Image (cartoon, rainbow, N blue to C red):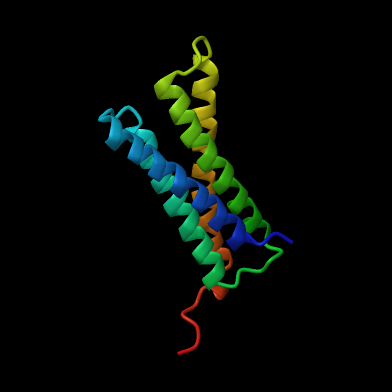
Length: 135
């Protein structure tokens, strides 16, 4: 069985390093072409995945929850697709593949939207596990 917290924390750590690197590059070079990508890497990648990891650590959502499995994988794939798609779309590192860049961007963003919708649904379906705990 997958350790959701560990998978999400490790993915968040990767995004944190990439986001910090992009920020350092922009500050050092004085060029801000990666501004939007940098912001999305840190907010969607680092912050959201980290918050989801803490959610699974704090609240004991059953290990066999299909909603949780869908949520984790759409979060990871959506974050990757959106940020890489955004980078491809705005920087156009390879000419002639604009349609592929756009599709990557849209599919990643759509997966991320699904991730947040599944998370919303899960907070209601698995609501009995979401408590303040013992005092």
